[in-house]
Length: 438
Image 1 (cartoon, rainbow, N blue to C red):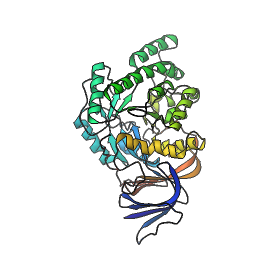
Image 2 (cartoon, helix red, strand yellow):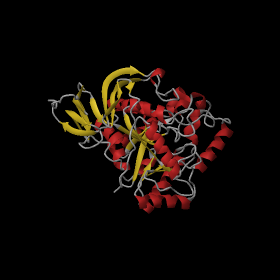
Image 3 (cartoon, rainbow, N blue to C red):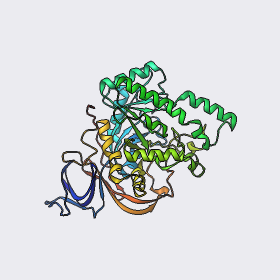
C-alpha cells in the first residue's frame, strides 16, 4: 500500500521546505525536497497537500483518559477519537485511575484496553507509591503533591528509592509537584477568610508559587543526588524555571498555562480550574519565553475531562481539569501566528522532544524508516461550537474561540485515520515502545 503526499510544506527537525512524502505500508519510505512531486505508481493513493503544512503526528505525553473507573466522563475510545481529530497520533495516559495503575498486572490490562480501543498509538505510565514502583517497560509518574487516585508519595525515603530506581533502570520520571502541607494550610485559611467553598479566583492563591516551588525544588534535588532523568510536569511559575538544567532536569508546559492567566477566571470560572493552578500574567509570559528559547522542553495538554456538573462550585467543590487534546495543535498554531514561538520550535516541543525524552521508538520525526504518523494542517478560519467537541464530557473552555487553522488529515501508522471530519473507526493505534535512555 502506497500513499504519496505531494506539494506539502514540510516542517521537520528545524527546517521548513516544500516537498513530497511517500508512505509504504505503515512506514515513511521517502521524503523529496523539491517542488516537483515524486512520481506515483499504479494503484497509489495521491494526496495533493496544496501547500498545506505537513508535520509529524503530535505526541501528547500528558493525558487522562479516565479508564478504568471514571468512564462516566471519559474513556479511551472517545478521548482517542478527539486526539485523532486534533492531529495527535500518540498519547501516554496517566495512572491515577480507579484502580490506580501501580502493579504490572494493572498496567498490562490498561495496555490491552488501549490496543482494543484507542484510535491513536497508546501507552500509559506506571504509578509510583510510598511502597515503591513496579518494573514494567513504561515511564514513571510520581505525584509529589495533592492528587486524585490516592497516589501521593510523601515519604522522603520512598521518594529517594523511586528516583534511584528510575536512574538504575534509565526510565524518565515525570512529577506532579505541589506541596500538600502548604496547600492544606492555604485552603484552611481561605475557608476562614472567604467561605467554605472559596470562589475560583482564589485558586492560585491556595495553590500558589510557594507550593509549587517547594515540591519542584525537592524533586530537582533528588534528581541531582541520584542522576535520575526528571521531567517536571505542567510547570506554572517563573521561579521553577531556574531549577531546569537542560540535561537530567527538564520541564513540560501545558496548554492551559500557555493560553490563560488568572485574569481569565472572571470570564471562564471553574472551566479553567486545574492543578497546578493557572497563575499570573507574568508567569504566563515567562512560560512562553522559556518555551520559545527551549528551556521548557515539551508541550502537553493535561487533558482531564469532567462532566459539566462536576465543574460546579469553587475552589473546594469544583473538579480540577479540562479537556484540551482535540484543540492543542490548532491552539499552538495560533500562538505561532502571534509570534509567541516559531513553527519549527512548536514541532520540536510537540513531536521531536517528547519522542527523544521518553525514548519512543521510530516516531516523532519525519524520517525514512519511521512510522508514518503525520498530520496535514490547512489555514482556515472557524469558530469552535459545542457540536464540534468529540470528548465524552461534551464541553471545552475554548468554545466560541475563533481558530485560524484546521486539522485536515491525520495518518496513524501510514493509514488515513482522520479525513476532513471523518474518523475511520475500524482502525486502531499501536502500543508505544520505549528504548533505553542515554
